[in-house]
Image 1 (cartoon, rainbow, N blue to C red):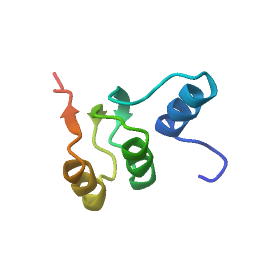
Image 2 (cartoon, rainbow, N blue to C red):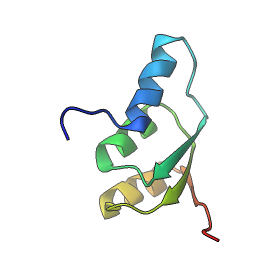
Image 3 (cartoon, rainbow, N blue to C red):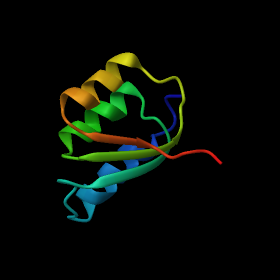
Amino acid sequence: CIRTIHAEMNAIIQCAANGVSTHGATVYVNFFPCLNCTKALIQAGIKRVVYAQDYRNDPYGEALLKQHHLDVVRLSQQ
């Protein structure tokens, strides 16, 4: 949807607006990041992505996260 902003992008923008470094940070999200958010997380220096559910996981996005050595953790569902 072009009228919304994803949580990952919102978090990065809010950190930038408030002078908070994202370098080496962990991001916690409900769903696996889309490709555009994946690229933004990498550029923001995020080092760990923790997510709860798969959602249209893009194989290229998964490969990018691995290529850039981000730790990706899927929370186990009980």
